[in-house]
Image (tube, rainbow over all chains, first blue to last red; front, side, top):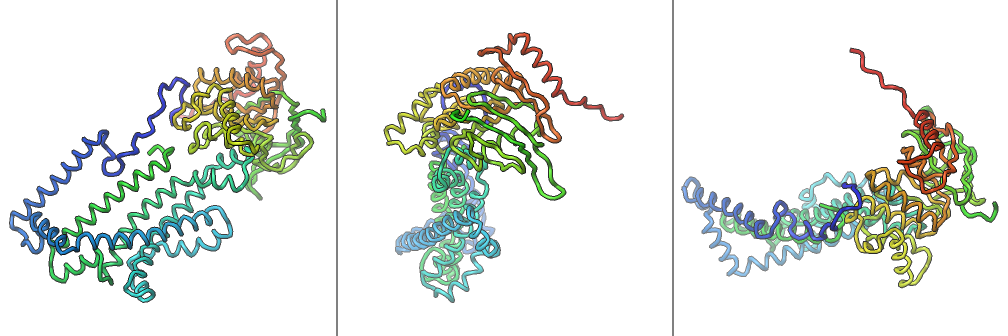
Length: 278
Length: 261
């Protein structure tokens, strides 16, 4: 924290670091950032092409960039690439919305109310170490292999993460804000809405951002074991036909979409908690 | 005395922290009266209970024994009549300077236009009318404390508590903050209780200086400073020079012995 005299000339520009998060974090100019990303991907692609061209591994085990491209074209032409993506994203979004909404709500309650804390925390703390994938069998028994079990697994994972972060954020609201609020005559309702929640917002937003990533992870876990559509299912199907090229195409699709979503969520998060100089 | 605004009586206030054998006495039984419209400074080393006493007057810490009475009413918790300027980070970083001041005015139930006008006026009073829409992170340390002062005074408190408000500022900024504080105090005229570890700061500002000492925290001597303001640290008159020397002597810690070789 720079505490200096009054002579600081110009206010810090608001947009600094707000537009090019995550992928481009270390670069100053967008063009330069894009250049670095392309360079990094180019090197990986070149190594990939060289290894597959060397003939050490058969193409069926380690497909060349060319055959993965062909597989992607094939999936696209069969009208599988985008519809699968749409189905998967729909599931992730629904599960995420359920889990994040519930997580923020319960976190706000347990973070500030002793009764709810005593009621929920021991149980939720026990749930936290259980990985989402371990819940898939239970989810299938409860909800069948339809959409319900997917929503359940994704919402469960997102909920625990978002709850945990929200709860912690609410716990560590600096005492000075509460004191300031009370000595300025704010009601408890206004203290909660205008002081406690904004003070916890950086944690809540961090939890939500983590939740987005986890929704993606648990989505694929849920689809791998009991689905008849979606990217996870398509991966599983490719395994049955030993279509490594298709698997690579789908994995790359997952990676690209995931990075893009994280980029957008990161940028939105920075806007929301703009006062947190990240 | 009954009609006065901001009469603070500290009656046999003792503050202990912890329970059982781990109890520490943060402040031994203390009596003090702050007359309406006066400026009182508490100086002393860390651990002397000066901030503890201020927090008790602010209603943040309940006294273990004794009571604090403001205009005939015993302090039971934070109250908008008792404004507080904190050492640092007291501003809400998610609000602009204007938003911070408006937060203090909300309880007055003003119309939207009147709210904005009053808040802007408060910022103009501390010379920050042009920075109303800046966030605290965009302001310097001195500007932030000016916003904090504007926010606290916006609620027209009758008692103003300041807990080392300029402790984190450099010497030049601190100097101009003293002038600003005396100016706005002249306008608002609250009863001020000012905590500092800087003897010069206390002597520049206060009518009464209480010197405190640690282990347990207590007032060891009190001085009345009747030199007219504005005072200058560079040209303290003879009376102030003597008081200053005495206080520094009182506060001088025991020498630190060298480790045995």
